[in-house]
Image 1 (spheres, helix red, strand yellow):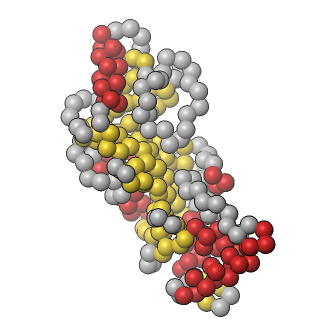
Image 2 (cartoon, helix red, strand yellow):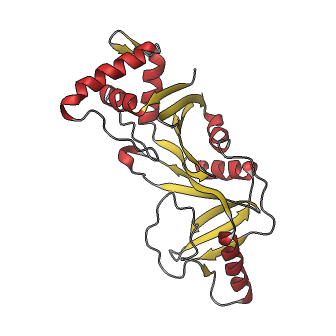
Image 3 (cartoon, one colour):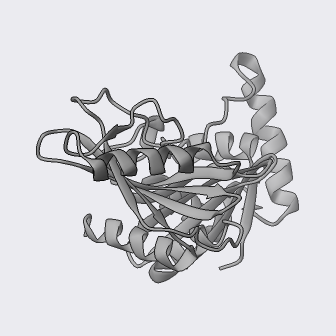
Length: 256
């Protein structure tokens, strides 16, 4: 299936016409043509989609309708939200049956590509710029008390929550200092991938995440796990595209 691209006004109108909510995390776009202006929006969208062969008479082209329905109704998704230099990285892969719809935000809308299921993670990870893994060993730190709820797109870029794992010890102290040094490095980009069961109405259901942190020393992956005591344990580990691909597949397996 060919790549499709729709503007945000087109998605607003098409979603309403199909009865499908296309405002899935991490995308956010307004309602256009409020009140009496909605008929004008519909006419404008009909003209623009017709000009691209995506509306035939009073019906959407099958490839557009199928893509938007899959994107809006699939329950399992992997979102990407972050940055690479000055560039925002916002994307979502939605799994439906044996296919996946990958949506990538452009300057004024979303570009959609329908892939085989095994191509989803590769497509998302491929949006990151190539960068070698940072040098050194992994370090793990933890919150010292029951944590407050955190954003699902948290990339753990702040050192305010860091406390050494397991109480006072030379090793725990060294790990804490190492994590603080990583977070203090000049930043080239950062963000998070979130695997979730639902993303409708701008909200996520049960989810798992892995973050990336690009520094002038290379790329780190940031992997978080909740301990039996309820505290959050965060591991900073050197990583590249292949390691990130493996970690995302590991998280997806938890939802199968």
